[in-house]
Image (cartoon, rainbow, N blue to C red; front, side):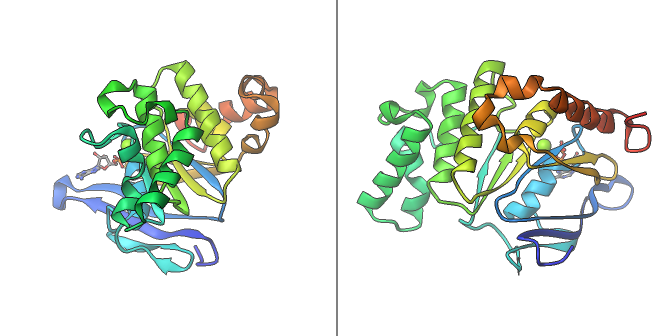
Length: 264
Ligand SMILES: Nc1ncnc2c1ncn2[C@@H]1O[C@H](COP(=O)(O)OP(=O)(O)O)[C@@H](O)[C@H]1O
Ligand SMILES: [Mg+2]
């Protein structure tokens, strides 16, 4: 995978443990994508999705291969890459506003400027009126919106999300998908989004990457046109469109049966 891609995984392998008990979480994974892509990674539990995200986030060094962003090899974490986890992992001792302003504060952004940035994102995710509350006073969906605002307040070039909506009820999840999509569409952000929801991947992604386990590999990469369409048409309309259903079933087939038998 050449460095001309904005994000490039080149022959990345990650092995946990040694000898008999070693687990090949990623096996020579190569994947490149351009700035502004919304890449959704799907696959069954244990296929290496989180490991893939952790390598780009800089939490996990590859055992082999390299990952680069804009031509520079990734070594450790950085404010250019924001992360949102399945559980919001908020700071319980800080208010909603304090959580949203945390990243800019750590990076030395002045009080006025970071308050403005926090306000901007809290308004967008619909939490401004809750700015003086604490995380435990928020519902799961609100906590996840705050985690998103906190990540976005750092103005990351790349947003990494690991099953961020997995714990939410169906209705909240749908609304979060729409919100995330409109934030992405209005920005130049590149997104790597991990999910085991096939419908979610096909709906949100410009690219859908399908992984299989033991060892963790990419078995297929498909382009999806729907990320650009949903704003105009509404998500229910898109998700019931025959073209959408066909792509969703194709991806599901790949996950259930592998690349050889899908579509037969
Ligand atoms: N820190 C670790 N130590 C040992 N094994 C791990 C570790 N992290 C992940 N694994 C193993 O690597 C494989 C891939 O895990 P993971 O990337 O979490 O998959 P996914 O997110 O797709 O469920 C699994 O078999 C998992 O048990
Ligand atoms: Mg995972």
